[in-house]
Image 1 (cartoon, rainbow, N blue to C red):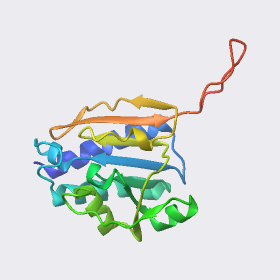
Image 2 (tube, rainbow, N blue to C red; image 1 turned 60 degrees about the vertical axis):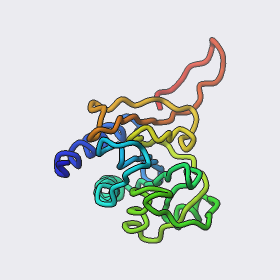
Image 3 (spheres, one colour; image 1 turned 90 degrees about the vertical axis):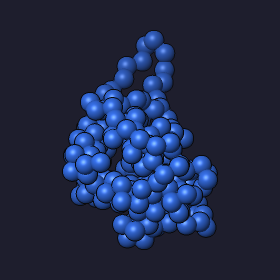
Image 4 (tube, one colour; image 1 turned 30 degrees about the horizontal axis):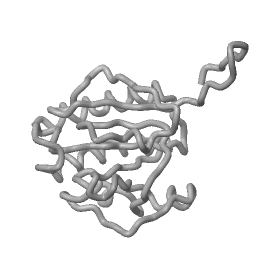
Length: 182
């Protein structure tokens, strides 16, 4: 697996998603990721600590300068709890849960988030404005309604299928209503 190429592809995908989602400082970006799927395996069966580390490092290098928070979704063994910075959890009054991720309960990216975040905690749920799903991990439960699919120009990272979501305000009203572009 060529790290440089995959980092470049993840960077391109993330920038495309951010451009379409129009996130601003203080917004939240969710990552759902199976490193097993990236290497061509089955989700949850062969996590890669190294791949998790470069994914988190790459995303933080893009998001941190823009003031966008990264939330890293764990696997179903942790009920898809998310790693976030404690400051975000406190600011948004998110429920902090008592669990530490491992490679086989949470996944490689959650473990890496605990390594790279300043003061990481796990929270039960979150409402984010956008996110990327690498390996079909189902991030939709963490994205604000109304969810809109984002189609990055590249559909795979390694062997993992990639999808993305952004949110938009609800359209309300009837046939006489007009809408602003947001």
